[in-house]
Structure formats: C-alpha cells, structure tokens
Length: 221
Image 1 (tube, one colour):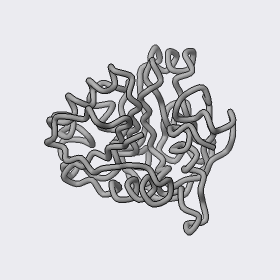
Image 2 (image 1 turned 45 degrees about the vertical axis):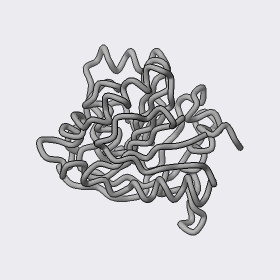
Image 3 (image 1 turned 180 degrees about the horizontal axis):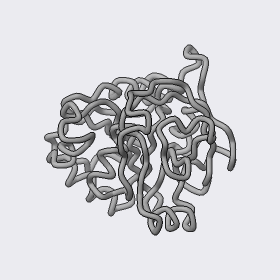
C-alpha cells in the first residue's frame, strides 16, 4: 500500500504524517506537491494540517483550487481512502467531498490542547481497529474547527452513521454542532477530522491513540 501526503504552500503537518507512515508503520509514502495532477500510483491520500495558502479568504478556500484537488476528487470516486486532518478537513469541505463547514471557534481564538474524543462508527476503513465509544486522546490545533451544517445535513450524518468521531461534551472547545469531531462521506472512503492523529502516534509523545486510525487503513492490528 502506497501513501501520498499532499503538500500545499503553508502545510506544516505534512512531515508529521510522513514520519508516522514511514518511520513508525514502515509503509511506502511520498510527498506530493499540490501542482501535481496524477495520483494513480497511490492507494491512500493524506491531506495534512497546516495553513494552506495562509488561510487567506478562509481555511482551505484557495487550496480547493489547486491542480491536485481534481485528482483527489477523481480518486475519491474510485473508492481510494482519503483522510483530511485539520486543515485537510477544511480543504475537503471546501471541495465538496465532505458536507458542512468549519467555522471560527466559538471562543474566536486559536485552540491548541489535548482533548478526548470517542469513536462513533467502527464500520469503516479508518476506524475498524477501534471499538465503538472507545475514548481516544489527541491534540487539536485550530481556529476554524467549529463544525456547522443545517439540521437536515446533521440528521443525515447521524442517521447514516457518517460521524466517525465526537468530542466528549466537556472537550468540545470549538463549539461544533452535535460535538462532531470527524465525519465521512456516503461511501465512507473519505474522512475529515479536526484532531491530529499523526501527533498521537509515537510512544515518545506519551500517546499512541492516533496510530489506530492509520493501522485501520492498513488493515493491521
């Protein structure tokens, strides 16, 4: 299985994702610059966190027009797993691969801290190694992580088990509707999440909750 870590101007978590995949999980992975237009040799696509294009206009709004995103959309239609983390989640909503929007946190401040979240659906390629309701701990680091959508969309996500993760209510610092921390598309091959699993995947950090998501993608325990 070969991974692509997409790099935009302003990405700053690309190296973290690359490190986890290459050094900890020992899988094949490449950095792929956002101007590339071919992802055919990759099995999994990672859209990492950071501040693509400096978050000008709004987070993910400009990255959505990068040449590579047409290929990301095509890859999603072919069923390839795609995971967007933090800014990557924002890019995926801007592209329309995921529903809803990531708005400014209810505190109107950048938040960086470890939080607890729970798995709401372990029937996906991203969560199959995690028990339902299993608590996970990983950091958040964002100013625009407040997940918002109309009531019809929220009901659709809830009723179709497309919510992958929720914050424990006391850890919903950004104000996301229904405590939503991560969602999937209809076919469950695209995941967007605001917490950073790549920053919770190395024992040297004292936390390996996040590695379970990458191991799930690989189909390993």
